[in-house]
Amino acid sequence: MKRSLLLCCGMSVVLFALSQSKRPRELGIGIGVLPTGTYNAITDVAGVKVGHATLIKGDSVRTGVTAILPFDGNIFQHKVPAGVFVGNGFGKLAGTTQLTELGNLESPVILTNTLSVATAMNAVIDHTLQQAGNEKVFSVNAVVGETNDSYLNDIRGRHVQKSDVLKAIQEAAGGPVAEGAVGAGTGTVCFQFKGGIGTASRKLPVSMGGYTVGVLVQTNFGGVLQINGVPVGEELNKYYLSDQLNKKEDGSCMIVVATDAPLDSRNLSRLAKRAFMGLAKTGGIAHNGSGDYVIAFSTDPLLRIDHNASGKIQTVNLLTNDAISPLFMAAIEATEEAIINSLFAATTTRGIGNHVAEALPVEKVMDILKKYNRIR
Image (cartoon, rainbow, N blue to C red):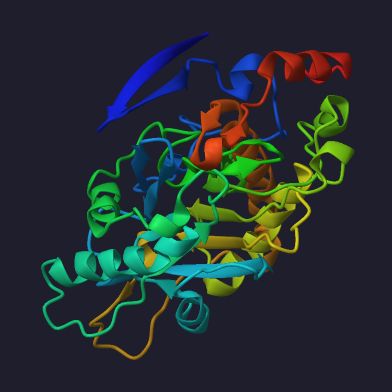
């Protein structure tokens, strides 16, 4: 079922559909074999918070900001271990070199559109400098990722303001996470359908440590859509290089992976690599113009790096290499499901130039999955 929202923006009136449809898992689409966390979201990793700022104005502004916080507190003073994997570098992920060099994250992770990266960085710097305890901070490594939403959004207008980024940070919360055409996913397109924000999680059994892996994605890429191993894109005859879509360029996916497992930067980078395999399982091809990045971080409080630590030696307990394969599997499954969740949640959106990104035809997809006996 769907209901409509009439949104008035100045002299413009725009009609949007708000989805009341269930998530794929609620419809019997069980991706993977590992159990999910309570919310099947990145926020199942204790302490992680997510906030959105959604910008919908007139007939051409369809963009926004999504903020992911590792924990509620001063991240600069208590940095968390982190790693990055670059699937395809045609994109902008600010802060990558320092994060990779030092192996830690000292700011919220911000997602937005391509031309708003600088604005988001300035906002993160303001946020950090204004926090109590940071009065003597003179350098901030703001981590900001993007996808290009120019098909639906007036990206050249650079409508995202610092206040939007700060709003997303300040309103970040745990629990269920809004998906689809919200925040940084407001104007994105995925597999020729409306994309957006998606999230999912996996919980390992106690025998494997009981750790949680959560993923959040900003989907704006293409290829040949597969859902739970079924060639849905082919069945719908809507995919990259099909005759009717040869001229459509695709671009970018941001993937953020959180875990409470005690991993250092090296193994977080390895975890990030596996998350990219989840994108591949959905049929993504890392198109030439698609900037595809994964950021992974650990929330284990015993691994935090105090900015003003007096000692020169840090003693920590870490999982061994042999113990992390279940986490690899969790990251792959959660990424795959997060991408599919973004498609199911997104609604048909009309934007700049009267361009339209149609919502995934869920009823047709369900029929296809039933045909292949992939509904549980």
